[in-house]
Each structure stands twice: as structure tokens, then as C-alpha cells.
Image (cartoon, rainbow, N blue to C red; front, side, top):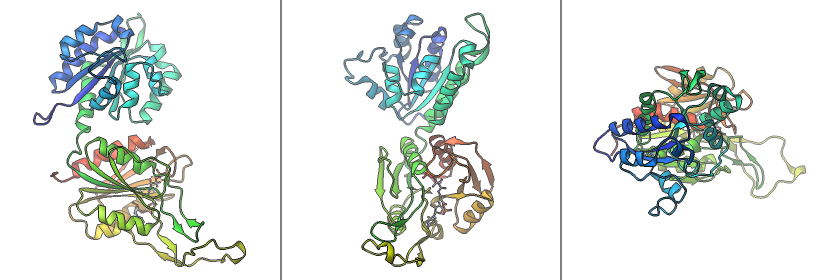
Amino acid sequence: MSEKRTAPTVVLGVTGCIAAYKACELARECMRRGMRVKVVMTENATRFVGATTFRALTREPVAVGMWDEAAAPVQHVSLAEEADVLVIAPATANVIAKLACGRADDLLTTTALATEATLVLAPAMNVHMWRDEATQANLEALRARGAIVVPPESGELACGEVGEGRLAEVGDIADAVEAEARRSRDLEGSRIVVTAGPTLEPIDAVRHIGNRSSGKTGFRIAEEAARRGAAVTLVTGPTHLPDPFGVVTVRVTTALEMHAAVIEAAEDVHAVIATAAVSDFRPAAPQTGKVKKDAFPSAIALERNPDILAELGEAKGRRVLVGFAAETADVVAHAREKLAAKHLDLVVANDVSEPGLGFGADSNRVTLVTADGAEELPVMGKRALARVLLDRISPLLLPRG
Ligand code: PMT
């Protein structure tokens, strides 16, 4: 880890499992790699390893109950804010189930719900519990929300059975934790503009031309970029989503308003990530009142809206420009055309022909298209997509400052 910055903080959650003693090794390994470790134990974990052991190892207070440390009156919030990464090792089937459904009935699960940090899970349990559909469904739900799962090893289990369920090697868990600790600050010093949502082009006082973009994709990218240290300005069309924490959110309605806001915000930034479904056309003569049904015209004259991303591409400078393309056929071919036409660095080509993907959905199936090739990603949640996309963009950003 970089010495010149303060050490990343790892909150290590320990649950009630025979492998709890290995969390001591994990704490030492993370500290050896230059990370600060703060331990949160469940009551059941204390039946397997004492809090005193962790306190001696980490030289930090160890939290068990919700109100342990008088110094931190709302401890789960202070731990949640301090965490660059939250790792739970071992993670029992019980805590995985509680996390999947958002339970918050002890300090560890409350901290997990309160933190923005990435969750790393290292499960350990009996092989039948591991294979149970409920456990696998809970893990899938958590992965879709961006959690990293370090799968258990196979071998002889404490219960005498043989199969998957042994806690993963400490080195493998520490690798995942260190990667997330790096990722949690890899955008520090960068300035990024994200566009999201639809634009609505007025026909009259109550009618408009619009589309089904919910803004979720752009909001998740803005949240993840801010979490990783970027100064983020989010320019969004109408959406029901609340302003993301730590992000400057500019709300607009029409393509013309989005154009003005983006050109201003993108003046001196490292990257622009344009997920917005910007309407290419607007009614040429929007009416101020509501046009009565009988007087409504059979055709509406339209005129072109400015292509915001293409305009940025004309004066690209050192900015990394990322476009999105929602296509229903020849997805990669169309994305390549946009990559060249708009002088982009990367186009996220998403196939919106499949029900349940893309507009308004919680998942996307995308292909990342650059001049060097195309990388097809599996269907993934929009938080997970935000992480992968920023992983690809981060190395492209020029030195910060
Ligand atoms: O918001 P969600 O519900 O999560 O849905 C996400 C999404 C489907 C809207 C998103 O993944 C997506 O595909 N957005 C792009 C929609 C689209 O069809 O873009 P386009 O092919 O019309 O434009 C290509 C690129 O140019 C886009 O980055 C767009 O923001 C930009 N553009 C387009 C037109 C215009 N006038 N100005 C622009 O900047």
C-alpha cells in the first residue's frame, strides 16, 4: 500500500464459526500489508475467540455490542464512516442471510447496512448449508449489490464432512481486501461529470416526448466514483432517485438544459461519463397551455437537439469521454460507430432488447467497446457495473491535481 497516504481502514467483522480463530491471522496479514484493522465481533464469535486477542493484535478497541465504546456514541455509524473496506471473515450462513435482507440487529449488521464501503465476504460453514439454495440465493443478491465473495475451499470440515465450506486461504482473503482498499481511493484528485436519466421535451404544458430511463445507471456510477474519492457532478434529467451522497447533483428537464449544464460542468474535468438518454429531437413549437384534444395536431414538427457528447468530443482535450449506447440490434457495431463519430474513449453498448435489462431495470448486459476491442460483460447489477466501468476508466485518467 502507498505509504504517503493515511493507511486504509479495514473493518473486520468476525462471526460465530469454528474458523473465527483464522480472523486473527487475517488481521495480522492486513496490518502487514499496511492497512489499519478495526474488529467488530458478534456475540457468538466471542464463544470461539476472545476480544482481547484482537485488541492485542490490532492495538485498536474491539466492538461487540452496539454501545460498547462510550467514546463513539453511535458506534455503527462511526465504524461505517471509517471503513474503506468491510470484510466479514468468517461469514456464517446466518450473517449472509441477514445481510441479504437488510437485517440490522447487532453492531456488525448495522455497520454493514450503514457503510458505503465495499463488502467482502469470506463464507465458512457446513457443506450442506453452503450448497443450500437459500445461501446461494442470498450470496447472489449480495453480489448483485456489489459485494465481493471469496469462495470457501473444499476439504475436510470441522464437522467431519468433506466438501466446500472451509474458510478461504487467509492470503486470498487479504488479496481481495487489499484490492478493495486500493479501489476505494483510486479516483482521489479526479473530477468527473456523469449524466443520467431521460430528457423530457415539452409538446405543451402537460405533454412531452421522453423515454424510460430511470437514471439508476448514472446514479450508481456517480455514487461509486464519489466513494472512490472523485469530485463528481451529476447532471440528471427527471428521476425519482434521491441525490447521491457526496455528489453535486444538477437537475434538468430538457436536452437544451442538460446541454448547458454539462458544457459548463465539463470545463475542467478528467472524465465525462454520459449515461443519459438524451432526446435527439424536440417539438419545434411547444405550446404554453394544454392543447385540447380536438385541436391536437396529427403531426408534430420536430427539430434537432444538440448532441452533447459529440460536442465535447469536438474539443476533447485530455478528458476521457465515455458514452452509452442503448441498442436493440448490432449492438457492438453501432457502438463502434459512436466511438469514432463522437471521438470517445469507450462506449458502453447495452442491449436493451431483453426484457428486464437496461431502461429502468436493476441490471444491464453490456459490452465495453474501445478502439482496441470489445469486452462482453455478464448480466450484472448496476452497482457492480459501476465498479467495473470505473476500474476500466481509472487508469485512463491523467495525473490528478
Ligand atoms: O437510466 P437507466 O434506467 O439505468 O437506463 C440506463 C440506460 C439504458 C439509459 C443507459 O444504459 C443507456 O444506454 N444510455 C444511453 C441511451 C442512448 O440510447 O444513448 P444514444 O445512443 O441516444 O446516445 C449515445 C451517447 O450520446 C449517450 O452517451 C448519450 O448520453 C449521448 N447523447 C445522445 C444524444 C444527445 N443529444 N446528446 C448526447 O450526449
